Amino acid sequence: MSKLSILVNDNYTVLKVIADNTVTLMGTKYCPLSQTEIATLSNINRVTCGNIINKLKSENLLKNEPKSSKHLCLTDEANKILKILEKID
Image 1 (cartoon, helix red, strand yellow):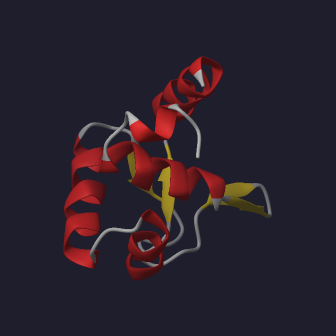
Image 2 (cartoon, helix red, strand yellow):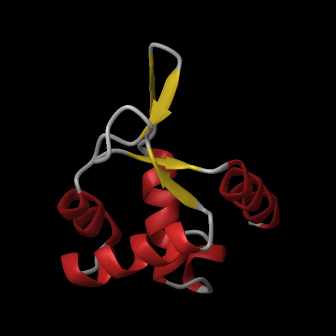
C-alpha cells in the first residue's frame, strides 16, 4: 500500500479505480466496469460508490462516455490531478 493511499479518502479511491481500469477502444477511452464492480474494487458499498460517482461528475472530474451513458470517462482535469498525486507518492 502506498503512503498516499492511507491519506486520501474514498473519492480518490473511486477515481483511481476508474483510471486504472480505463481502456481505449477505437480511439475512445472509458472504464467498462459497472458501479458494483467499481465499489467492490474500491472496498466501499454500492450506494456510497454511486454517491461518490455523482459527486465526481458534479465536480467535473468524471463524465459519461459520449457513445454510452453507462460507461465513465475521466475528464482532463481528473487526469491532471491524478498525475500530480502520483508524483507526490
